[in-house]
Image (cartoon, rainbow over all chains, first blue to last red; front, side):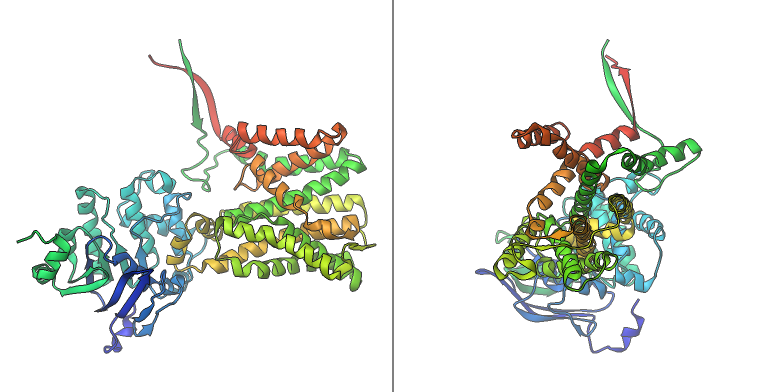
Length: 258
Length: 334
């Protein structure tokens, strides 16, 4: 995917510079900047309300920034409509799962598979997409020979909905995936069963931004971590280094840590 | 000994709504009969009724078209309280083309259908971003505004309307045209909503942000759904204009907005067949009650209340469920 882009070495895969968004009196995101290389796994952590989800909304176009720019593969995507940004290959999983509750699980995936992006990349006719959808669901851990992929999404347990959220992203054939707390609300066993799926995506050279509260799992897979607090980026670096920083300890783990 | 009712789905549905496994003629008939019923019943009825009830049937078909149009909009997440807008725009367009440009109904009806679709879509384009009740309020207001504009500026005949328009060849022709239109729209919409395209429309109703992140422009799809729905409504208006050979301010009346919704509620929303069935119950019922006199509206209202309380899911959903399930009494084990 996107091999031709390798030539533009000076332009990073994704560049976020000085993003700011104010909601009333609160600066949800306050001049956050970072670069992302192709194939990198970036972790974003921070206490509740530190602006992580707003940051995702700003990058994916669901919220328009007050100031700052987002460049994707050298292209300014600031303020584009969400579907345009998705069309360029940025897929995002919502923290609060957003499946199509009235459709069977595999029919959920028909919608991204029907998008102009996927049509452009692969084509496909009515009916073909059903098979692709079931394959994708299997990829994220739906049991193929069970009834689960055919059940209406509203009756699926939370664990499956989270997996489907990932499948909805993958269906778009993205180049960058932004996972907003994919593991929230999952049991340890469920997280453990989903980690290999993420690791497989890493091996496919997919670029991933992961927002996560489960630090142990996040640190295992991410190359680099940025820490947000009150909308500001307070640290950036290797997972180990970041957690050593005093400011992070204070903000993230509470000031009781000695 | 106690008994309980056991319900089992018939095995014909292979896992999902739209994949069937057919093994025999009996199973093919099982699927064919419900689809053949509306066609056969409607044409059988046209053969036996007199002129008065033929007119009632035409008007019923018109309301059925509006109900189908309403159901498509709802399926795509747009709740309309203003089907009269589509109806009225179609009616006035055909009236204008016929009165001022002397075009025959052969041209006015198709032009008004497509033109009405375009006009209504353009009128509602700025509010496509609105959802739920906000969109509904705008659709409610637009026909009321248009009718006042016509009254105030006295265009298109003002309060008098345009009369002496050309009619259609015969009542039978009007009847068959309207019934064929209803059936065509019914089967087209039912087919459409289960295609991948239709899934996108249903996805927008379910979760529009999730459709956006799937790289699909929801406003483009909503505009398309709006065009289809308003074209159907405009066709109903155009047809009615040539049946009455008159178009005037009443075409924007609330009846045309409310009755389709009542039909959808009585018949069962989201199925297309339900709203159509609802229209074919409510409109003739309203006619039949004319003999009752002053209490007509009361009885009509009571009927609506009883229906919504007794069968909140709608008649069609109820029958569909019964048709697809076996029911039997089994012994309760201890």
